[in-house]
Image (cartoon, rainbow, N blue to C red; front, side, top):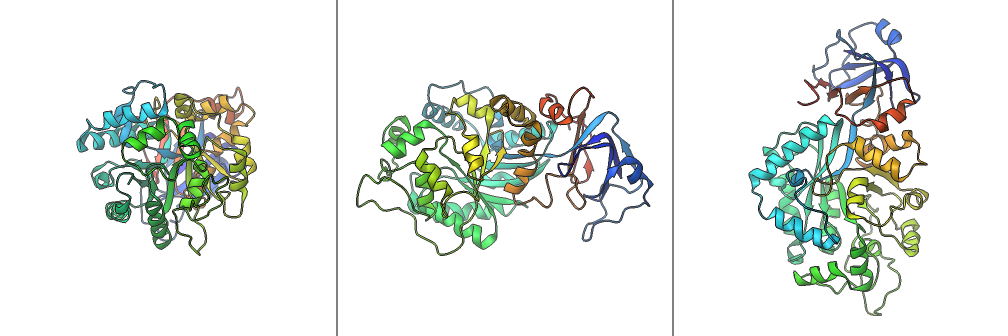
Length: 441
């Protein structure tokens, strides 16, 4: 199959005018000018190890005045909560929102969650997402969902009331995750997941080579809880029975590093304080860290240290960030420290839809000096790197997965500006070599 478009944005070099992509099975086998691709012998051979598949060798699809792009990659989402769109009014505080979403979740059944996840898949696909990193509190439901796009399933794990059961919580989730082709583990956050839980997740990640993600330093209230042992989140967690002895000494980032056995927390207010994590004499694992909105100057030094976070990936969710009125996202500091910055949508309990185009527009508004091309990298190249798929996803390149989307392309401005400004469902898409029936399929 050859897919021709007015311009092909490969993310692997300059855009190609009157470009074409040759697809065989579920892989890209050639990219270039349409005249060159169309003149080569056909059929294209299937990549080694690939089965005969969706993309036939002799078909030509002419998309006309469209821009052809790699399928977008959502680096952080909670499809569990698609059904909560518009049901949680903006709260006075982050802790109030936690109370509100907990109350809303208490009314949902397993069938509600399955329907919510399926609705989320369909919506993400309509807006050009081909791959999603989805956190779910119910990994046992994975086998009952209709996975319409490439998915990394992360089991969201909490043991705040029973830290002694950390290994049991993780191991049960792993059993359920075996139903997924690609999966990882997601201790929710340092204020809801114990050191034992984080440690067990890292043990499994090393043994089974899976991905890890967590929420970190999201809100001012989280900073107040860990650094000052005060504030609404501190009081709420204390009320529900969390052991608060780790509060009042250091920042959320320093707490996280201690949970991972990396140490280095500054400004201990109690001389007998000790980190709860156990040191490990093995290479440090990389994490996908979500939010990271609250950073002190001392945190910057920790992040840059040999045992810090500079090999980690950070996911920013611009519209959810604005919904909560979080502190300004410190993009420049994080880039200077060497973080790989990605974009995600978060959940519809704090967002309007699952469009990564809308996230790109919100990010560009927040950071107008960042070029549209760099913004697009955050939902293609950077997110692929975070998922350890930089050699398979995020580019239109020989040997990569045939995940493609198309959007209308006028000739009035640069193609990258048009991409970031786009505000509709995509007009055409291919996922894993299969042309989708319609944008609303």
